[in-house]
Amino acid sequence: MSKPKGFEKPVGVRDYLPRATKRLRRIERGVLDCMARWGYETIKTPTIEYYDTVGIASSTSDRKLFKLLNNRGQTLVLRSDLTAPIARVASSLLREEPLPLRLSYHANVFRAIEEEAGREAEFFQTGVELIGDRSPEADAEVVALAIASLQAAGVKTFKFALGHVGFLNGLFDEALPGRSEDQKALKERLLHRDYVGFREAAESLGLNREQQEELEGILRLRGGREVCDQAAGLSRHPLALESLRHLCSVWEALDDYGVSEHVLIDLTMIGDFSYYTGMVFEGYAAELGFPVCSGGRYDNLLRQFGRDVPATGFALKTNRILDGVEDPSPEEELPVLIVYDAARRAEALAEAGRLRTEGQAAVTRLANETGESAEAGDGGRYARVLLFTGENAPASRG
Image 1 (cartoon, rainbow, N blue to C red):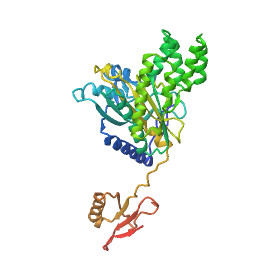
Image 2 (image 1 turned 30 degrees about the horizontal axis):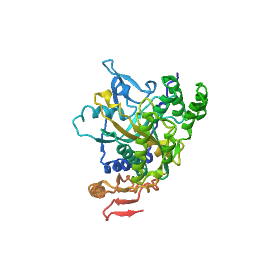
Image 3 (image 1 turned 135 degrees about the vertical axis):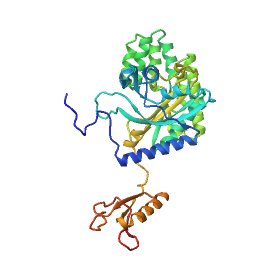
Image 4 (image 1 turned 120 degrees about the vertical axis):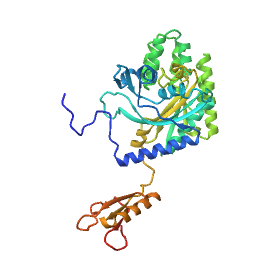
């Protein structure tokens, strides 16, 4: 294997140049400010965690975790999401805080990838966790906040798809009792949106016509509020029916929030079925062909850290928004360039300090020995140039 050149980076990571970094910070600030107005407090957790706690509890498969060994021989991981670390904190340092907890975050996360074009090993997430409330109202709150957060990030046109893991679990348990491997195979195909493969797998199970139609009927369960009524005719399983009641209550609350126009019900959605326990959702920007937001209910996660409380939340895929959605923000104001000679340095630096106090960016530069201002070649970089040279009052250019 050849030695990497000095300018090369590992596959899946990137440099953010100043313009992109400014925009990323604008997105971050806008979204976190939005979340704060909904009562969510920002939290920061370590970049590295123990594999035996957060690593195992995360929704990320083991082969996608970045693992390290510390000097004691303990296995560590780079965080692959923020939900598991926040569950750890909520179960320990925040254990005595009254519920529900409303926590927000923005951070980089890491996932090992195959060397495929377009896949990132390090990316950014901005999100919330609502801990200690299992009601439909809590689920509706995080969906409504996800919509508000996308708008705060500058995404203008988007759609959210809403599903429920419990409905599929109940329906599959009714149609395929005791056949866990067959159920898992069907869920895998739904997870990857392989509807042709789902039909083929269902046909191979040796079911009678009624059972076959029941399973294939799942693929038609996408639309508005009417989908809940259609789904109720497919299964009489108690879990499926209770899940539908919960999902319909979420929809009704979203209607009262005034955001149901952005939401459709999609009962083929299952999320990571080893992780989520209830409602799941994804948000899609019109400009992009993949999700920019995902979330749902994960009532069993905190139990792994010794605190059995429900939770729900979401994460925005901030770098996808950065890359794929047009920046609606106006150009930032350019800095003022202050050029001075040695005799007037104190005066020039005082003027730079005054401008910065007023919120204006200022760059200072010593004039060259010939007395030229040295701003030649800086075209477009500065709003104006102030000259503190010689004995005259400061001159302004630009």
